[in-house]
Image 1: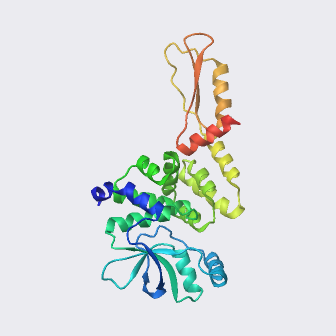
Image 2: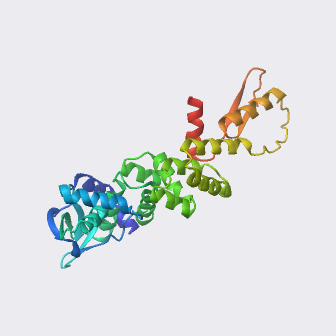
Image 3: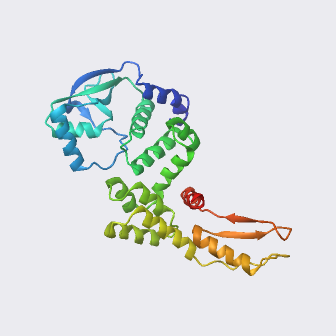
Length: 289
């Protein structure tokens, strides 16, 4: 499958974006003949939101058809995209639904279409998007850089989204359910200590802390980490003022900083360390202010 998808993922994405798969048509399909999507990236469905969508469908009808595929000779359809609309339509008591039908696709096209169409939906939460990214990379053997190019995102955006999968399961579930925002999650992941991260996650849930509260904690966590004793370098001209400046900068930026004297008395360099792309973004924003 890795080799197979590698030959055509670009054209497949173009076809999805242009709604241009050969044989597409919109027709009404009985709800009972539609099977769930095997590659559904969305893991959690909010009951209240489904009920609201169901009422909207009752009043105004379905504004956008779902997407399904149907293999030749089969009497059922399999969902590609639109599970919320499908569930809400069932809740509304509809017997059939408008659907774009894609016919006679092979397994690689089914997987690719399903993941790509769902990734491009704006209402997919960050963890489910990350899971879809990972599945697309694993199944098709594409790199983060290639994936970013093909789904129209920056490499940093794709990388930061994938890093959310490093969070503990309950924190990931909190993002999926909407209990915490993606901003909370990005701030949490910049805290390298797992126990502290979990502790602060519980505080977010209990105290309804803002994203800024978490970012401030992460910044303070880096600043409060004990500084390792550095062995003096041969010929080093580090002054007490340089050491004090390092300490001040570390507290301000919330990360490790080194003030390194140059060969002359009036030159040198300042080295600012970062430990993740999120950390780099955080430090950059502080400097820009």
